[in-house]
Length: 346
Ligand SMILES: *Cc1c(COP(=O)(O)O)cnc(C)c1O
Image (cartoon, rainbow, N blue to C red; front, side):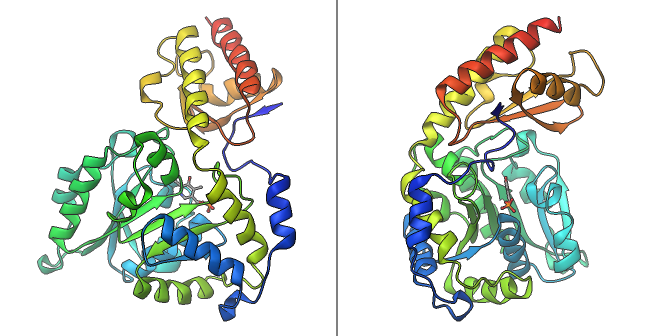
């Protein structure tokens, strides 16, 4: 079975497990776990920022950032398909008392002009926009990467309005590899940046929030309040260290393999996907023209019968994600299964 449902499915390999077994640990709620501290310093240095804070999940790190940046009753502005409004189960409203306003954006990428027009300043008796949240790369946007110049314009827009900019960079590594840019370029343009080590980098668990010492001080309190104070978490931080030091450059392979999948699908069935839009490790297939309605569960079931697990992202959207545990041989086998299936549905 080839599993392309998600890049979260990777399992720690031997080097990672050895690092975990050997990890020096302490109680991180006392800030005494040396391996967690080393991870936080390493990631902060990779992004050229003063600090980082280790979280059990990207969702908790995102929500903590929102709570730091946006007071209860104020609002965050984001795109309608963002992870923070699609997959975090209403946490901003439930735990932060935060109002979320969304705009529909092509492939999830916010347009700076639209953002400038939508930001509401406090003085007009409306709900003030305190933060803009972007997602780079964009999951439901098919791994879309913000053109760097768009990021610079978004930064200029938020700065001019006195609004904070949060970046959900669960896959910021993929953006950096796709654009061949250094990681600090991305961190410099956001007030808070969340990065995941468990998406394609192969660590079993964890994300980090990058920001100023003031922000991270507040974030540490909110993390504890949400139940995210971890004790001897050096065991998982050790895995994260192996992931960030060893598994970033190889993401180029994941991107190449995703394009191979997309090209094969488009060859077999034009219209099902556009390989030119596959910039990173996510391939979305539009199955609307295939048989059943909704077509995506139908397609995924048949792919499963043939030995390929794919994800359902919507009634007519199938998602394929390449990752550390997928080889070129797996991709060749997946291509054959997809081609047969797409041709058979003619
Ligand atoms: C997976 C993901 C998250 C959240 O990560 P978890 O660790 O699963 O909570 C946040 N944003 C994006 C874009 C993601 O893909």
